[in-house]
Image (cartoon, rainbow, N blue to C red; front, side, top):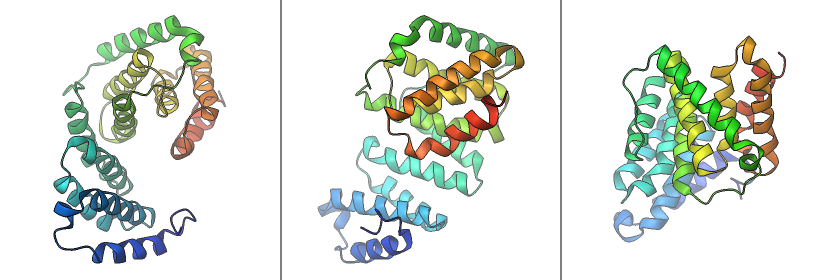
Length: 241
C-alpha cells in the first residue's frame, strides 16, 4: 500500500522489517519470496535515493538468483541506480555484459563510416515496413523486451562515456531488433533514441515523423517509466526544429 501511494520511505522500512523476519536460510527455502522481497526493498531504496543500500541488495539478489532470467530485473535496476550515481562506465560495462549474455554483439570500437552505413540500413528497413509494422500487435517476445530495455539504458550511458559512433550503433541495433521482431513497451524509446543520432538539418522532417510515430505508441503501451526521456527528446530535440 505504501509503494502504491509512492511513500517509498515507509515502504522501505516495512519491507526491511519483513525481510528481518525470514529465517537465515530464506534464500534456500523461500527462494521466490526472497527474490520478490529483495527486489521490492531495492526499488524502494532506489526511489528514496539510498543508492548504496539499493546496490548492496541488488548484488545480493544477483549472487543468489538461480538463473539469468531471475537476475535480469536486478541488473536493469542496478544499471539505473549506477546511472543515478553518475557511474556511467559501470552502467556501460553492466549492460554490455548482459547484452552479450542475451546473444548480442558489442563491438570494442565502431567507426563513423560504419555508423553511417548502419543508419542508412536502419532507415531503409523502417521505410520498408511502413504503417503495417507500426499498427502491429504487441509482441509476447520477452527476450526482445528485455534486450531493448538494456539497449535503452546503454544508449543513455554511451552519450556520456563513448563515441557518437557507438551511440549510433546501439540505437540502430535496438531499432532493427524491434523492426524485425515486433513492437513492445520499449519500442517508443528505441524510436526516439534513434532520431537523436539521425537529427541533422537534412533529416529534420524525417526525424519528426519517426518521433511522432514513437509518441503515437504511448496510448498502446506501458511507457510510464519512459515518459521523462520521451518528452525531453521529443519536445527538447525534435519538435522545436
